[in-house]
Image 1 (cartoon, rainbow, N blue to C red):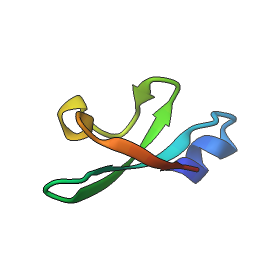
Image 2 (tube, one colour):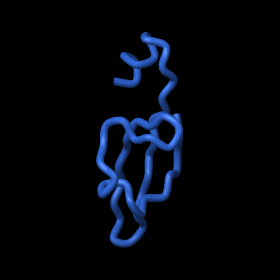
Image 3 (cartoon, rainbow, N blue to C red):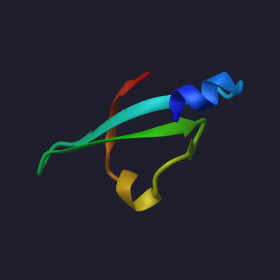
Length: 52
């Protein structure tokens, strides 16, 4: 999806986030403050550790 958006001129970020205890990792696409391919409940409490 990141490549698809890029080819159409939309710069999105691939964000990797974690919850430390209990450990959980997740990634999503984001433009500004808007998550494109996920729901808020999946992202709440996750600390972004890498943005590509």
